[in-house]
Image 1 (cartoon, rainbow, N blue to C red):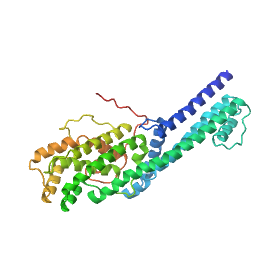
Image 2: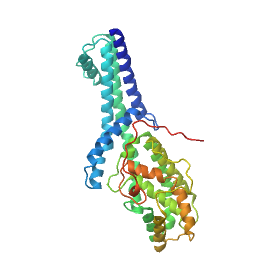
Image 3: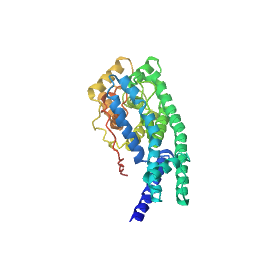
Image 4: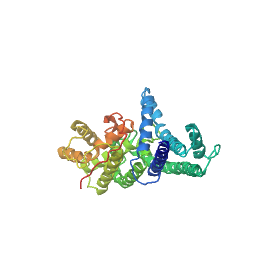
Length: 364
């Protein structure tokens, strides 16, 4: 009976070690948004701790300062979690291979993983286990070291456009401000220069923020900026450009819109955020008619050329906004984004993502 128990211990410990290795590889190496349960547990658990801390903040600036540490601390906690599980797994393996008592099996596991060499394995099977564990420990650390530069390179690329947008859209970013500034400079045509760079930006964010989802929670360098509110301002500006401004239609604005809402939807998929894949243009959106009318009148009063058919403008704007309305607000709430009109000003409060990712089924 004891032999069977030790065999089960070796098997269970080996499974834990393999599980940790696969989790690390899928988190760091696999270039897609893989649902990694262990990584998800770490980030959701750390967010719960930081939410308790952030709730004590009296101002948004204090809350932002607290949450700025969340993603970096979660990344630091991730390899620590890997180490704990590997030590537990190989403690089980060592005990199954005959190391008694359990405390000695634990000492040998820690010594092997951290390559301390303070406990010598007594025989060939435990030597083999020690070599495997040591190699696994070095591999996990190497993976993390290679992971961090790619994280910060993607962050810098993202923030470059967010910072540049401030000169056009203000801080917090606003689609109305963006259009007014271009008109005031007699360069309303220059508005069309931003769609191509932002289409590229959306494609880059979709790839990086699903393959490295911790980037979603990396906050901008100042408390009044955010990648998600910037995305919302650009999408709203493109939607207004395509529906309200009395200018020739520009396909680049519409391609930027499509790139943008597909990007936000892919990120929403990773966090199990529900949305309608194929919304009807007449479906309700978070912006009501009075808000749209106020924006329309503000642009018109400032001299911006607007189309005279206001009802059709509203229908066209709704038809674009409905594609990204739900995911924009959900991601603004998920990231606790700073105030910005038509995005975080109406988003729900942060709700903890599920510990298990539910896969979306897509038709067609």
